[in-house]
Image (cartoon, rainbow, N blue to C red; front, side, top):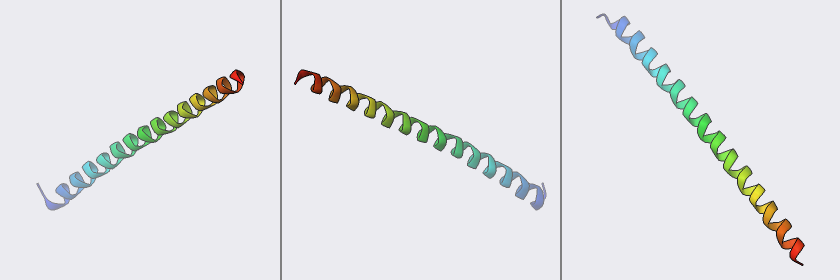
Amino acid sequence: MSAAAVSVLTTSVSMASAAQAARELRLVEIGFVLLLAGCAAGALVLLRSCGRKR
């Protein structure tokens, strides 16, 4: 295998790894946003229930 072929192969593997990492990071970001939205919704429910007791 020539040096150019090894370089192309290494570059394509590196780009595939970067694409996979970008997808995983995007999933983590979406999960974090959903977690924050759930916490905000829970806080609103608690605030409304405390307001009704008074």
